[in-house]
Image 1: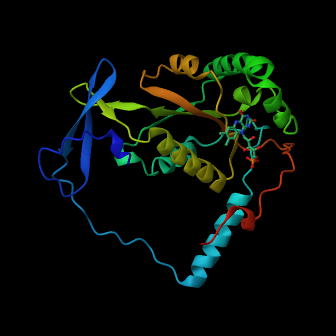
Image 2: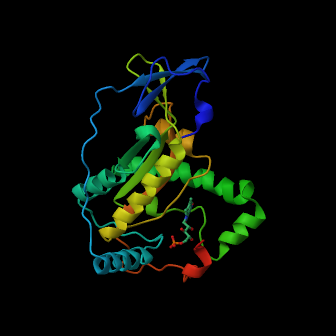
Length: 259
Ligand SMILES: Cc1cc2nc3c(=O)[nH]c(=O)nc-3n(C[C@H](O)[C@H](O)[C@H](O)COP(=O)(O)O)c2cc1C
């Protein structure tokens, strides 16, 4: 936790465990931190399954193998996907850790064809400007081998679009703002878990962070001002003729350092 957020004044009472930190706001600026303690929060025994070493090795290999098959798939089938599965993967994403357990995420699931199309129009319009003007030659050249551009057919075709918003702050019962520590990192972790959960059920997506589309999409989806769009994931089965760029991943020795 970023301790610079805390007021230098000590808490008004001793808190031995799990302080909740509320924020006082004036003129949209955080001016003071008010400490409160959830005094009644029980701490309960925790004993998750423990595996023999061989089982651990096997499970770690199997999970690597599953995740190593994950690919960004830009050709998505219109075939319907059970809504319960989408709800379950989002429920899984909501198990992510978050700064001070603020759970600063909102997952908006869009299946309505008209809304999907509106999203496509917004994204394509902005993405064309991104590619032609904002991104610059280097970025566009780096993307060339992936054969991406501003045409995003999958935004109409995929049975679901999941738009993930980070809640930059919360609202307390007294209508004051509640600090959401590390909200972006927390939501990114949650998105990673969501990607793993999708892979686990054989669904595909395109991890995308539509540049400059956030405000328009927030308004379209009627999300409140404290929510900022972080990611847009079209979700479905891969199209039967889907292709992916033949990318190679770094070797373990190139990403891991043992000290
Ligand atoms: C933060 C982030 C933003 C991305 N944005 C886009 C995007 O706008 N459009 C797209 O087609 N792919 C996007 N991608 C997908 C990457 O191009 C893809 O992950 C990368 O090429 C590696 O391929 P893989 O996911 O199949 O391993 C994004 C990925 C990340 C992590």
